[in-house]
Image 1 (tube, rainbow, N blue to C red):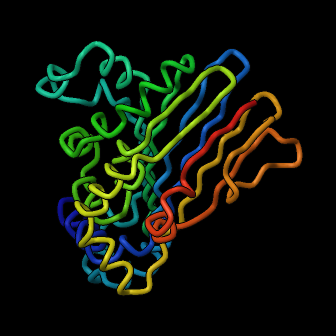
Image 2 (cartoon, rainbow, N blue to C red; image 1 turned 90 degrees about the vertical axis):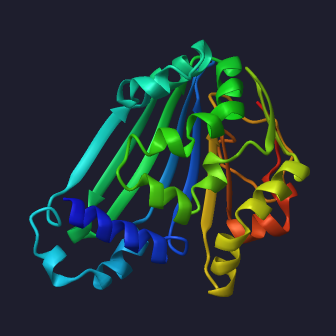
Length: 254
């Protein structure tokens, strides 16, 4: 198994910068709660990069073994990490799950973070503190390949989103990018993203927000409102977002 994980880590470092689909999905409910799913789909990369694996790995029993694992953040964290969480962060961790799916023979590799917010205030706090909860120290204890994954796959575009300011109420979802913090984030990750750009690589990004009532106002020209006016979708890519950060802003009333 160790040999397989080493091979996967090499794959991630070499290629997943180019082939990851990033998605944010929010489903709001009438009682004020919200289900959040952050998806990182690396299957496209796997379909190409498995050719780099040596035959000895492909013939191993581990290579043919499918993984579909769901772990709770809090229960999976070691005591040394739990002790560093305050009471609110503990609550966030207990309401968060990490889902990891891997089937190399079928070219599947996906990771998801799922969170259930009880109300608008809970969601607001979660989004403003997500980057702390998904630090490398935390993720590396939950998923064997997360160390390479987080460095190479662009997931920090979502997990490192401490560059947004949120205003969330029972009938409002406002997200505004802080350009100073965003520019700092770009500078920190400049090497990885410049490599993607040099290789003419596209990193798709999609955010979907579904509400229990029709949306009355959307302040984003790039967003698409569904026919029933309950779902707002923005489809773009990381490079375009870097060029025009304002396109990531949302002011949605419903």
